[in-house]
Length: 170
Image (cartoon, rainbow, N blue to C red):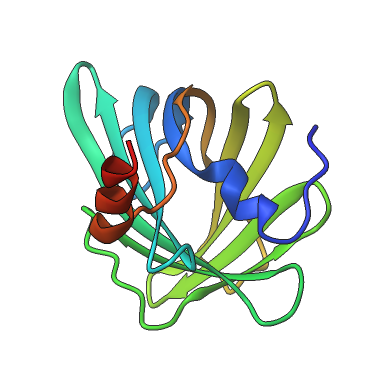
């Protein structure tokens, strides 16, 4: 487990990742094994982490998602906007917090609630577990578990002017 705090939490998720997942059978589809590619980069002057997620099952594209992460005003507070190919669009951000070992978000919509648990386990690896509740949070069911390995570091945002200045100094 990695010891993270402040902006290091989101920075730890930046980069290119590949992973293996176990999907439970849900009202949205059949369960089974999947692989995923995740690309996460900072934008807007480093204030926002954009994440693109692509899942494949049996060699064919399956779920696709786009997430937007931002740090809150208070230390350890975060927000996430989640858009996916199942048609989920957020009416409000998912609230999140860093509990010292995991970044946990709670998404709420008319279809139910989903908790996202991101756990950095070190050596360029993180785990993600999704749990859903369809009764207002009384009962929770694990719907997905994955482990992702970093395949490339993230590159910080660099403006065209900064890049040009760098080239001109050579």
